Image 1 (cartoon, rainbow, N blue to C red):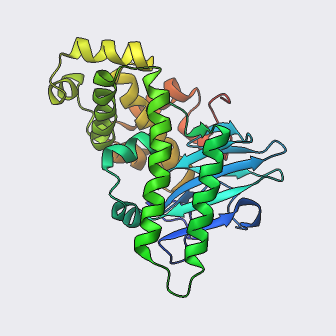
Image 2: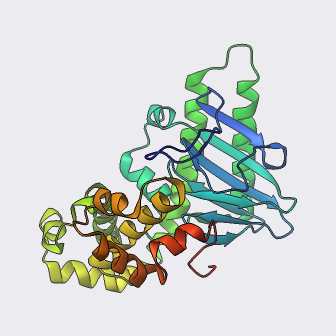
Length: 290
């Protein structure tokens, strides 16, 4: 486990100097699994059997459910309460993901959780495909000279099956002509949330009016552009409060607030508690379980 520094979170190593790794969930032992941490890699956590554990992902708690696949990207805050789960962990680096040919947009669909929670409840046939493909990955890794090309293609096939399922779920919520814009909006907010851009910045980038953009967000995401920006700022605030030793004033400055007192008011309005109270509360979620 890496020690905390003012600008780093404790990071759990899932790859052990490999580009891609498969392991049984119940066999994975780490001293920080059950305390808040982050990963330096992508992680797919598939639950086959459970007795009621849960995942805390970016300060939201999600139940472990049989047939559920959690999709986590690098840097997300994670804490797992294990209750005799049986399942599979698949992890891979960002560099290895790029070898598959998966686009940045497709990665956003899979790991951005713009519409859905950070999990998919897999149909039985998709569960079997996931297990078969992860078994093939594990088999190739056991060979004397594992082929990176074969491993890359296996991962590409697996992610595309999951991507197809994501699009099925998204199509139930949003016409394709609008979902593309909303994914682009999410990407732009991720790139610019520290700059506190006005809605007109995002509307201009998407070539629509501010009113139309907010209407799309309300209709299909039940939110607004401003709320999406504030939610991203709140998440980063929580990560820094929980994982770094930066002072509240330093965090406020890092997040683009010129006045620390304004940051405190912002945080209390959004989270229902002060930054120092949140920091003292440990790993407890401030958001109801979903």
